[in-house]
Length: 128
Image 1 (cartoon, rainbow, N blue to C red):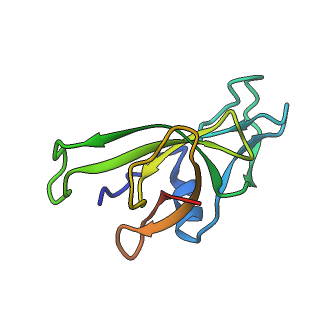
Image 2 (image 1 turned 45 degrees about the vertical axis):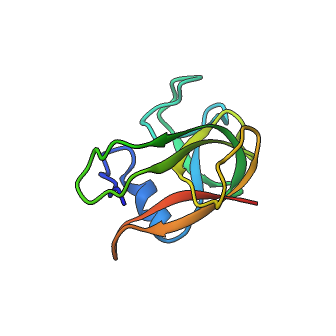
């Protein structure tokens, strides 16, 4: 499994994911919800924001089946899905697929917290 590499904007988000919190950023200036985490709002350019909890569900927007082993010890093939969040339709989150069958566009999905190691957790998706 691929281990995340937190940066300045995403470090706190990864800490919250490890605590099984499903959050995205909300702009304090205009209320725009955004993901991934970044320093300023793309709508109004305000730098004030807070974490907002949203429902851990959405719909499959797209997916790929990767057959190339880009990292050592990563088993292939694996499926990666892009999910449009139900509570924040302008936000799209990418994650691994934990379904028995291939995903389908528009399919309802639920987030799953998957541990990479004792410190890091990632968000994967499974069918509802």
